[in-house]
Image 1 (cartoon, rainbow, N blue to C red):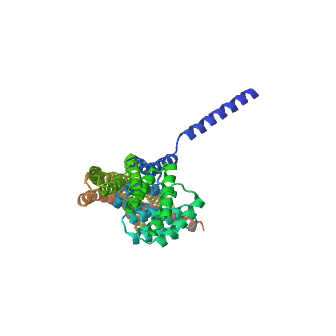
Image 2: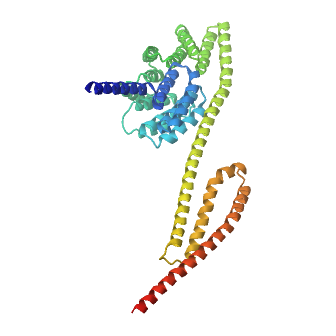
Image 3: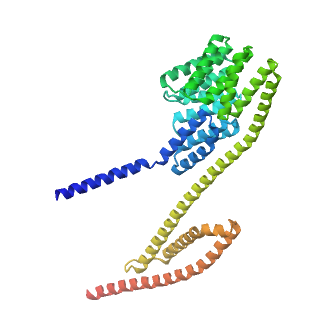
Length: 453
C-alpha cells in the first residue's frame, strides 16, 4: 500500500511541476507589456523608429486589457517619445499630457518623468520658459532621489545651454554627472557629456570641448546608442566647421550622415547634409556641395510627407483609445442596468409579498388607503422595471429619438394603468371582505364571552 501512496505522491509532484512550468512559460499581460516596453526603448536608442508604432499599439491594447494606470502612463510616454523623435511635437505633447493626467494621481516619480518629457519637447520647440517650468515642477515633485533626477538635471543643463546661459547650464551638468555616478544609467551618460561639451564651447574652452564631444561619442558607440552617436557627431562637426577645421569637420559630418542614414533619422540627416553642404561650399567643391544640398531637399520633402503618416498613426491610436473607452463605458452601463433591473425586481417582490401577506393575514386589519399606497408604489416600480428591460432595445429601434421613446412609454403606461386599476379594485374588495370577517369573528368572540359570564 505504501508503494501506492508513494506513486500517487510522485504523480502529484510531477503534475504540479508541469503546471508550474506551464504557468511560467505562459507570459502574463504584465510580462508581455514589460518586454514590449523594453523593446520600444531599445528601438528608440538604436534609431529603429519604424518599429515603434506597431509596438505602441500593442502596448495600448495590453494597458486597456489590464486597466492598469501605470501601463497607460508608460504607453502614452512611449507614444509621445515616438512622435518627439519624429519631430511631430504637437502629437508628442498631446500624448505626454494624456500621461500626465493619469500620473498626477499616481506616484511622484512617474509624474516627474512626464514633466521631464514635456519639458524636453518644449526645449526642442525653443519654448524655454515652459521647459524650465516643467523641469522645476519635476524636481519639486520627486519625494526621494531616483535616477529620474539625473534626467531632470540633464535637461535643465540642456535648456540653459540653449538659452546661452553657460554658468547655469554648467551647474546642472555637474549635478547630473553626480546623480549618474550614483545611479549609473548608461542611456543618459552620453547626453551628460554632450552638455559639458556645449557649455565649454560657450565658455570658449576648446580643449574641454574636444574632450567631452569625443567622450560622449565614445560612450555612445560603446553602448550602441546609435541615435546619440549620430547626434553628437553632427554637433561636433558643426563646431569644427565653425572653427575652420575642415578635415576633422568633414570626418565627423560624414560619420554623422552615415549613422543617421543607417538608423533612418531623417531630421538629423537633414542637419548633417546642411553641414556637409556648407563645408564643401567653403572648400569650393561645388559638385559635392550640390549633392548634399539635393539630399537635404529630398529628405525635407520626405519629412513633410512623413508628418502626414504621423498624423495617420496618431488618428489610428486615438481611434483605438476612443473605441476602447466607449466599450468600457458601454460595459459599465450594462452592469449598472443589470443591477438596476435586479433592484427593481427585488422591490416588486417585496411589495407583492407585503400585499399578499396583508391579504392573507387573519389578524391584521389594514386600511384601503395603505393598500392604495402600496399599489401605486408597485405600479411605479413595475413601470421602471419594464423601462429598464426594454430601454436598450427601444433606443436601438427608435434610433435614440426622445419623441418616439416617450410615445412608446406612454403606450405601455396606457396598457398598464387600466390593469393596475382592475387589480387594485380586486385587492381592495378582497381586503374589505377580509376586514369584515376579522371584525365579525371578533364580535362573535366578544358575544360568546359575555354570554359565558
